[in-house]
Image (cartoon, rainbow, N blue to C red; front, side, top):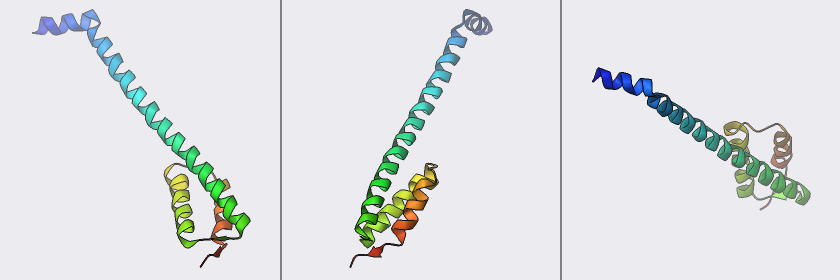
Length: 99
């Protein structure tokens, strides 16, 4: 058995197996980062679009405000978004609530 293990190590098979495992872990991390980055970009776009829309209207429905606040929370806290939308959201939060 020991001779087989030494033969495997000496043949490079172990090195190839380790390389394959490392490559799989790196690819998984890249895909996960890509999904998070894509989600961040989409949330940024939607929050900015709807925030500007409601600011132009001068009012917002309560349920729409709740949705925007939750989207912003995920964008900012979970995905590490920047501060531009913080300013926009402060303006949205001060809008008149539609009845």
